[in-house]
Image 1 (cartoon, rainbow, N blue to C red):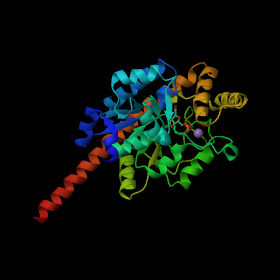
Image 2: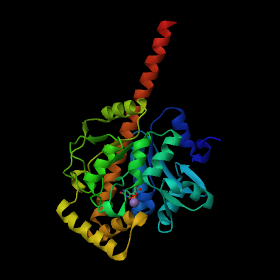
Image 3: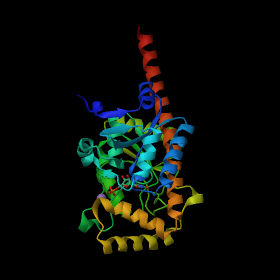
Image 4: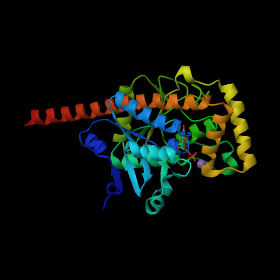
Length: 321
Ligand code: PSU
Ligand code: MN
């Protein structure tokens, strides 16, 4: 049995992959733990439509009914969104246990990357990645997303990392792990709700085609994942100074209530939505959609690149014969 036998890939995604057509993976923790119902469902549906509008097939990944699903059906998307409150949050280490228990779970960035790579999907869109939490020097709370990026050949398009994290330490860990950080039309590493974090990216890229070339080469060289950092649209960015005050308040609340470990990110996100009276939620939805569009463009460029390489290899063989 191969690892692929443990995936339940939808017919549409399977067909697209077999034909070398562009596919974009989407995570589901953002649905189950990142946003309230019904905004989470609306976001998930809109993001899938955005991927399609930009020429790729969406593959939302989740664990349900004892299956690791790659490309969930419309009905299952609704179950995930409605049942979010009761769903588990599946990190890499939870997958086997959840498949045995049959529990419903949203997959984190780390787990979605792993499943995407197993299925043969190379591009993935999310909101923001997990990272090194503030105070990690005492709590050791560093997201499994960073380790996964170091070993799994998937390009993750995100709006940087949330400023609830320690962004310099997050970037430092990505460097240690050998993960290239590409700024999409920016030199600044974005901070999720804000377009800039004050930290620089390693490499600025100007187009989806340029991103596709870097990603394809990184994978040909046998290296791990790539992070594409795409800033939130200007129209939805939140003032970083106001944000910082709300973040500090949310972190204080988590400390006071003793919230830690895997519950911490969902707690902070929820609290910040309350403190910003929904402004952070609107921003979150806008940036995920923006990332989905760029991810689809990159997936299209990667599939063109692969077919032109295949074409020139065939032409060379023909010339030899
Ligand atoms: N970004 C969002 N909303 C989210 C998350 C990221 O805009 O809900 C989720 C992602 O699934 C990410 C996870 O992988 O939070 C990180 O959790 P932790 O810090 O526990 O690793
Ligand atoms: Mn954590």
